[in-house]
Image 1 (cartoon, one colour):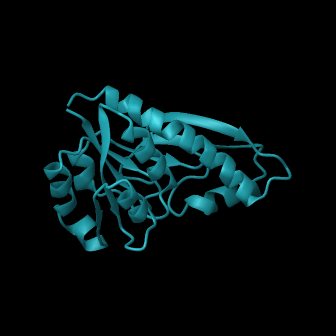
Image 2: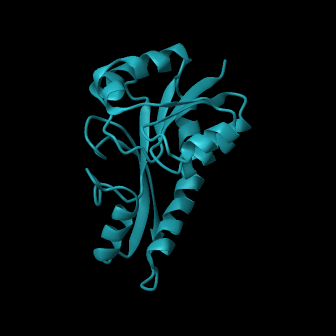
Length: 192
């Protein structure tokens, strides 16, 4: 039986796309559901392109009900991957999937993490601090933003001539290279 992933994303979903591409070829793992808090998120189109079902939810459904957990359990979801998902994960979901929710952050944590630190805000903060390196952190999710146990970190060099688009590009290259591989490794350790 395949292990089943649910991806939570709030925006474009380039990491979600890489995960869908990667696991499309797998005999053991599949992306079974894409969830978003944004009805206009491009990740919905990406999911549709791969014929993966999706679900759009609002704050009430996410924080005040068990609907999302019921949906995940009904679809036999084994693992949750956050890919540019901007909301804090509620306690009931953390308890339903202990040690089975991971996120990717576009910086070397613990620097440049926390509430409001996502996407371009992270890259701009890294550049404003004149860091010589940027990077990514893949980590387990807990009740706080970007504070879960680290699983993997990778760095890239920032040149003085790099603009925001270049820094973002370098970071996304690392994300797309490592996130599917790390997720696959974690899933291989999970018993179905």
